[in-house]
Length: 152
Image (tube, rainbow, N blue to C red; front, side, top):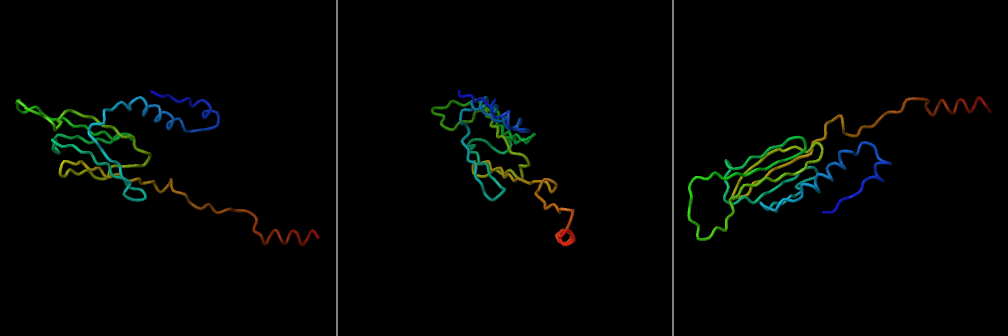
């Protein structure tokens, strides 16, 4: 496992503690085994879609939870009956997959079709956080010219 030393960055940055914590947490929790397989697609300027291939699971077997910038998808197949498999190629084991979401990214929709779980995400920046033009109060250029004219 590779670790990074962020000490030099602490000297010249303010307010990035959370970013460095997320990088460290990603390294610690990156031991997921790759099941179930998934895709992350940017569908627009501020929209995304996560698709998980969950063959063998139904919508009632999967829980999708969003809590404080972490999206958790958990699948649990109930043991209804014991079968004697000659070959079991479709995995129906328990899984838990977590995704770290950026600030202001929210889950908009979750759908299940043909063994694919699709989760639609959108970044919605609050109006107070969007850039805005600030008017500058003070001396107007016409006043500056008058002062220069009187001094000469």
